[in-house]
Length: 72
Image (cartoon, rainbow, N blue to C red; front, side, top):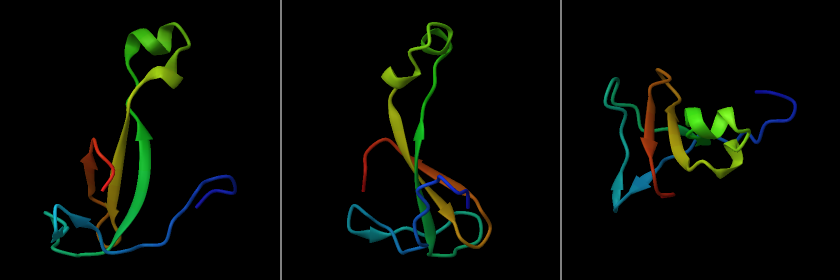
């Protein structure tokens, strides 16, 4: 996508031994991303770096996003 982004290729994702399928369209190929979970207090104090991160898988077909707290 962007010049400085860490884009990864669309891929199959395995969660707890099962292949992830999109709950909207049933597609099985996702684009992995890592997202920061910002909070108001940390943002107010410029401490966004201290917030937790989540792992996102974006459906390559319909762009629905599945979020996970642990890396798969």
